[in-house]
Length: 249
Image 1 (cartoon, rainbow, N blue to C red):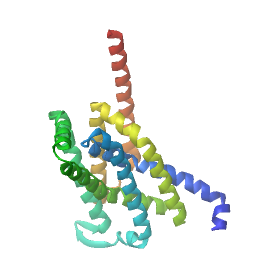
Image 2: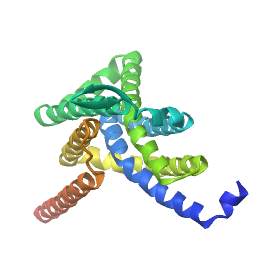
Image 3: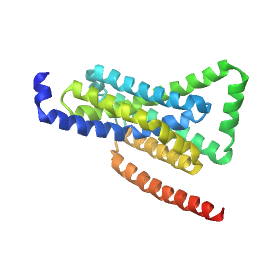
């Protein structure tokens, strides 16, 4: 352990892996924010942070059974091409994400007030209903976190040689995401157009997961670059709209 701490390469690996884990966690933040938008305002931040804590537990849990994770690449059956356990998890997660994102886009565009009405109704009716909604959202977060965590852990294993470095990097990444979960979530909730853009981002992630599960590798860099450019344009539009409103008043 002392040799590990005295090696400069350890800190370089920790820094690079931490940054990579933060980047890989962007889709986690977006997905958690969209789901938590159904909750009463007072519960949203706590639910986002709980969702990220669940993500950390998922990652650490997969690291503890890393030998089993590596065996997920073994072929289970052949249907046109060989399919492994990892492929099935990615395809299932991709389908789930496509369903959720498409449903949320429909609700936000066709029935923009439905989410808020349901939340107020549930919150005012009985506490039990509110707890059920909260538990249901956390359950969905846990299910998809397994998929995101699988990607994160496999990346960590490929970039670092020592388990302690992976664990510290994941903890740092989740702490950073918890700090920014509030501002990012509030920004998405304040601007419906950014919310729809975030949902489109989740559709892309879902398609990418399915593509990887069927044997076609798609670099996340392409997806993040496209969405980053779209977000940049959207922020410019928001600033121009705010300036126009200010001039009118």
